[in-house]
Length: 561
Image 1 (cartoon, rainbow, N blue to C red):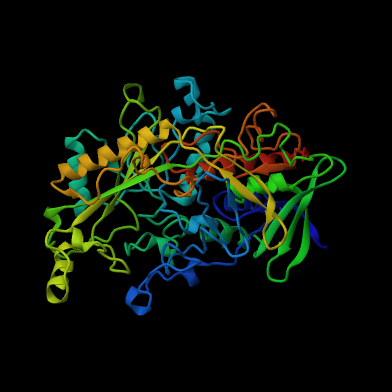
Image 2: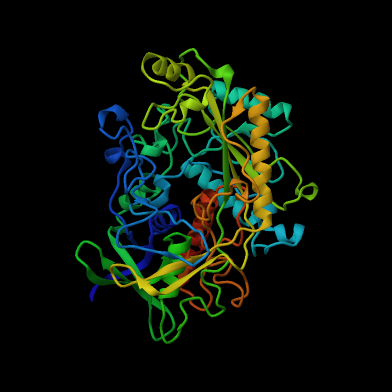
């Protein structure tokens, strides 16, 4: 096994958590190495932001490595060659993995919501799940730092569990979003400017958005957030960071003194087994990959895996709940052409607006809005026969496409799942990847909490379409169809697997995300989350990673690590 020099910190993963850790620790003076399982990527050079779909034979359709479209910035997929995972019989779970510098921050919709005060203490409110060992006030200063560093637009609303941030001005609603807002107001559904990490004003030398609407392709001017160019690139400029790509981490290695002494990994290009020595190890490979690494890090000191004395590694895995409804809006037919591209995402959204005590499910959701005249690409207006008189061929079909282009609106619900003991990942004893590393096997269970929440989503979205004078395309999913609830993992918001807590018997890391029993190993991704929320997790991953990184830097300065 080839060995590298010794670093102050070895970070596994370069996404939101790993990128923030690299940024913060290099600025603190630490010599850092980042191991990334995927290849290099630079938005300023590699983005297809300005490419027209008609320039390629696929017209923008997805590929094996880019299922969300051939121009999508994120290389990865639901199934990666040579890197299988398994699902327990009778269960359903889908696992999206990114394989590139910046990880999933190259894919996400930049919806940047802070967890609220209630989200950290829900068990105290309704008796379900567990409280976090920290509160919103513990994390708030780090949210502020993330806002200043990365940038997020929004509006100050003063809602009790939707904390306001240090916002840039939000873009104005588009035409169809004004209609959505009008309908939501009549139905008493809170609808406010969205909160996205896309710059509407220049900060930290980054240009503001020019409203081409292609955020998912990677921004050539770095007006939106990705770890690649906003965190990793500045860290590299310090001269303190070494970035190693195509490095598949195998395990955290341990010394006889009970401390981690580095990470062994496979050079995917050559198949060579390598080892990097480090005084501190930070795992930020994503919630499930980090759980896999901990479980695979077995030794005489930790025979069941690192941090797994209580048997909780991989446990209490969660994902965001999700379902969608779209409909035809006659008022949007034959629209007057005008420039309303906006950012690559919604300009309005609906945070949770009801009291769960009056409902038959315990936790809420937010509503994401979509529609309008997005760039014509593969699959545009598929199902045109569902529109009045739509379909056919020739001149009439072309006329229908022009008539109905943009005459629809869609809603996506994103809600909180309550952790349960039947949703977890473990090592599959009979399956390894192409490098001989044991892979994960997933177990998954939605409960009535999630199914009834999803039913409410469906009913609400259909009411909104109706209030807009529209017609929903698809019938209401039945109870037997789970009310249209998404497959576990498919929203790509997995959290948990190395949950945070004070007790090593019921948790994996402490409130600073330090692995119980191993003082120089930390976790800086979604794995430490005690619970989901009705909010996307990336902003909280960034804030917690920054909090953990500042703690690591302080402890190293004191000689405690």
